Structures are given as C-alpha cells and as structure tokens.
Amino acid sequence: KTEITDQLPIQVNPVIQAGLNLMENLVRKSTMNLSLQLTENLPDVKANFQSLEQVLVNLIQNACQALESKEPAIRISTGISDTSTDIVITVEDEGRGIKEDHLKKILDPFFTTKQELGGTGLGLPISKKIVESYGGTLTLSGAKAGGACFSVFLPEENSQSNVKKQTESDFKNTEGNL
Image 1 (cartoon, helix red, strand yellow):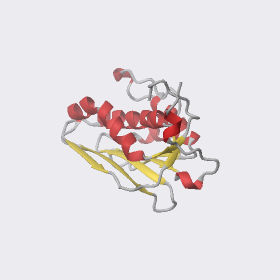
Image 2 (image 1 turned 180 degrees about the vertical axis):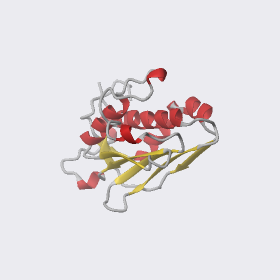
Image 3 (image 1 turned 45 degrees about the vertical axis):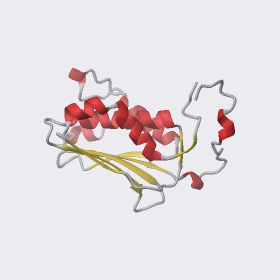
Image 4 (image 1 turned 90 degrees about the horizontal axis):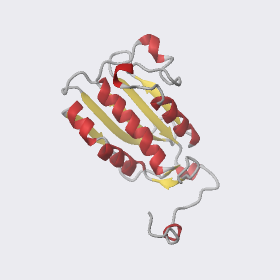
C-alpha cells in the first residue's frame, strides 16, 4: 500500500505526463488549446508519485470544467520559483474564473461550486494536504480577471534532510510488482 508518507526523490515532469494521460479524454473534450511548457533538468522533489499525480489530475479536471467552450486554453508548466529554489508546477485556465466571495473558501473542505457536476468539495483540500505533506504550498492567483491559476510549490529534494534515494535494489524484492 502506498502512503503519502512514502516519499522518494522524483522528477515532476513525468508526474504531469502521467496525469495528462489519465485525463486525456476530458482534456480533448474541453479544449483545443492545451499548452505544455515543461522545464527540462529540474532538480528532484521528495514526494510520492501517485499522490502528486492525484493533485495534478484534480487541477487538470478543475481547469477543464471551468472552460465554457473549446477555444479557451489550459496551460501547464514547470520551472523554478522566481523567489526561492522551489520547483513550481502551474495549471492555468482561461475559464470563467472564481467569484470573489468564493476565493477565501475555495480550499475549504466540502466547499464546491460544482454540485451539478457531482463536485464534493474535497479535491482542492485533499490536494492542498498532499502538497503540504511534502513541505510545499498550493496557491491560487489570477482568478479575478477570469480564469484561474493554481501553482504547486515544492522544495527541491536536496533542501530536505534524511532523504532515502530510490535505487534499483528497492525494486528487487517486489515479487514482480512495480
């Protein structure tokens, strides 16, 4: 069983690719304008691949659901923060934006603007908890002018102590299950 606490040094770009693969059908139905700008050779972050993928899937799903037609874009990017050594993953949409009175509640458990779509109000709070468990932050910006931009800031792996490096020997006793 994989826990959020099972954190190993990983690259963020393959996590984004995996999340996009899972959400491919929804993305194709939602927009004709997907922009992917992944910075190469980023430092590792200490995280759990599947849990971070869950965060990306949630942010991509929210971006798709915010679009009112197929013309508005979704932009996904990675890079290094301008103000720290954090690795930044950004998911931005040109959708309907988030109402002013919703901004303060958007990360609260059970707050949803998507009840008609079966929204539970748990996706963003769970994503925030996962990101914070890695020593990172989940932020929202640019929502007032229409569209939303969620950014995941994660400390680079070398900035954390007691890191277990993932090696080939970690996989040798797994009975063929990778």
